[in-house]
Length: 130
Image: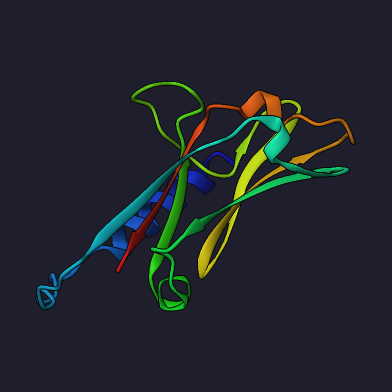
């Protein structure tokens, strides 16, 4: 049974042998971002196990969502430290849903009680690569 990981490693190394192919064409990449600060709990909509808050995001286009690269991060009120979303906590999960021109921050939880107060002041950054 101990030989299985060794065999897997040897197969992986053997698969990487051979000449390196030619470099592809140089491309260009545009990066744009939007940073939002999560508001006071009264601004959120609480629908039982889901709370949500929406904000305009003019940088998000249908083309970006379908063919680009969109990613969301939060600082969790920790300056200089950004973590990708979704982010799971003991009581809830913080994530985002985006559509052209709009980003919705969502809290998924096990209870009907509002937990938005836990996230007040968090920053959420949406980054788009084109």
